[in-house]
Amino acid sequence: AVAAALDEVVEAARKLVLDVSEGLTYYDTYDRAFLQSVIVIAYAGGGTLLLAFAHRASSPTGSLAQGASISPLPSTGALVLAAIFFAALLALHSPLQYLLYVGYAVYLWDRALAHSPLALLAALRFFLRGAPSTPAPRALLARCV
Image (cartoon, rainbow, N blue to C red):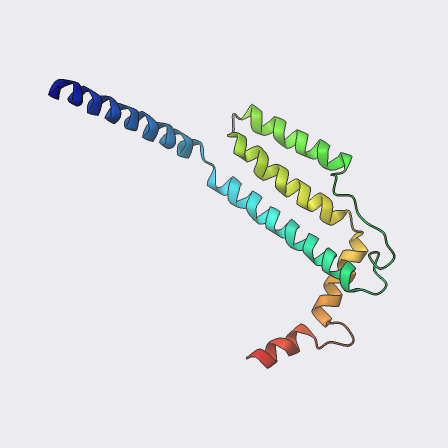
């Protein structure tokens, strides 16, 4: 009975060592600089998209006030760009999660750029200066301090 229990413990230890070595293999292939870059690019795209949505929602002359909407489906250009990235990542034998990270960044920027660049610049100017009836962000910050 003791020998069987010992064999069971040894087998569990071997399984644990194999699991840990698989994890180490993943971290050996983990490209931290690449992933950090993709995450920063995705967050910048998401921030730009939120800025565009906020401008459309708050602007009386924005396209949202006129009833226009932007499709949630990615453009053909975004699909082609994502396919190129996916092919390159697959050729490099990258983990499948990388495909999701890159796809997310491409999608966010595609949806942000679905708004015209001039509208994005107008939104940035609008939020930096403040709406005519509201104080500028700098004035709001000064009140908070």
